Length: 182
Length: 261
Image (cartoon, rainbow over all chains, first blue to last red; front, side, top):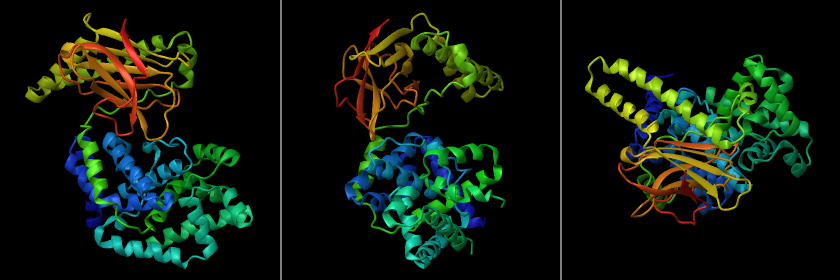
């Protein structure tokens, strides 16, 4: 981990510690940093700006109420927020109760990716890797993540064999991993 | 990496949260005994986050930040709400001798007192070092324990208007120190974006928020020492269902109200 990346991670951890102590300005700082990704994920899942705003509010209020739900030693904050947002949005889409405890969600992300200087380049790598996938592979990944569909549901929609869908999803995730390790 | 190949694809689906049924059960069983697959699952969790980062979209409207900060300001830092954890199986048999939720609630209360006493002992040792801050913490801990076991402590039992499935709340409240311990059982599940809110109903004046809670899978929840003003005499306690961020004043009719006893 580079020094700058280490600082990026520790800054998030410090802000979460400040939130734990009731510091509202720390909450505002984290909102400014990560509301964009949380809102974008919720909007992509729900396709409705009002509903996406509700998820945005819910995710950050969960952080305010239970900052201990995020363990800085076990994962990255933006990844954690984005995955919580996706899970809550899928729950909302399917009108079901939240299935996971927020403290159960652990998201490790390559620390250098969190360095602000690297952030834009990393996003380009991720989006480039997505763009470089075959349309069926990208579609399978997106249906699984943004629509919360099971591989059986994707197979029914696409008419592809179950095994093919499974293989595409795993291979797609590995492509993203490899793109960020370069 | 030596991930078991027969589980490799299902691990990816599990990381995405879309694996269901027998396949999900099988992989959860395997994960319990396979550190390599647990490590790979953690890496896949990071890959899933990368998928989230692939999204580009508009920034949220400015009103969203104002809404959030207003909700944060209306909900100052509260003592974290700790749900009552499910009892380990080895304890279940022992606890089955208790026939009422009230008995279990009393046991939980005792456990809280024991934990508080340990904290008191730890703080006592530290306080001997002469730190004024530690002395103050020690005093607060002593007051808490004294309050909880004080004969002045008044118990409130909250019961549902509709008796099935008999949700129940027990509040132990000491007005002169503003100390409250609240335990709930058999609470029905709430829809998303809703929460239970406990209210202290004073003998005069408006209801005072006394904590938000959601029940766990067993319908249990606890609120320990929420921030409350000192010296407020309680007429009773009540529970309403509120929006997820809580309310400064009740917005719905109480679903449970208290009586002393």
